[in-house]
Image (cartoon, rainbow, N blue to C red):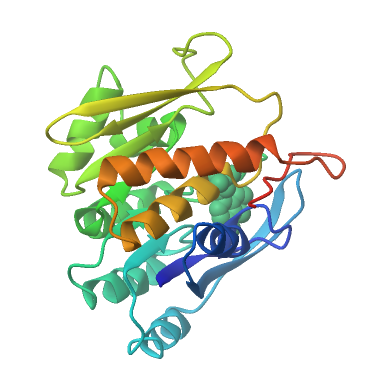
Length: 255
Ligand code: PLP
């Protein structure tokens, strides 16, 4: 079972629904605790309503007897929700934690203030086994003092997180070979890169799909490298089978 603490996105492209679909498609079972309710379509987010911290704590506590083998964290909308999520993680020592930092909506609207990012860094990061930012999120989380992604990831690992899987879908500096997307796993011992054919659409929920798949594979006992590789195969297939229902971003189909 994978405990998912994430925001609800009514489109089903990202957030809790996406995570639950990914977990199920990868052979796991998702236990879903909402951290926020968002109001959005496939173009942009109109509102984010944090779930009260007491509700997050209560919902997670009620699941305590269940065999949770991994935790996946998505959108955290305010400082109180962050503290509640940190408490939930603290109560499950030894359970692998996958965190997908959600700083911006697919349409570009900010979903996190600098104060929240600083608190995420200090309070949650030391409890994360693998963080899955895209390149833009990594740059924003690590700050301005670093030359490249490797240095940025080393700084996050010094903060206590065990590994960082950087996705290149957004590729802000255009470093990937034309027509390819590169994802790189940074650990204290080594770096490992995979590249994939770049798909023509812009997807809503690609990061959620990937991170939830990593959590499910870790829950099944796979090694970090194996979990990251198999999750990428799954996520790429979901995007390749994706569809575009109308205006805005495309939706992954998690089969
Ligand atoms: N979670 C929620 C609730 C969201 O609304 C979004 C984006 O809008 C995300 C996560 C992140 O989505 P993605 O996987 O596209 O980064």
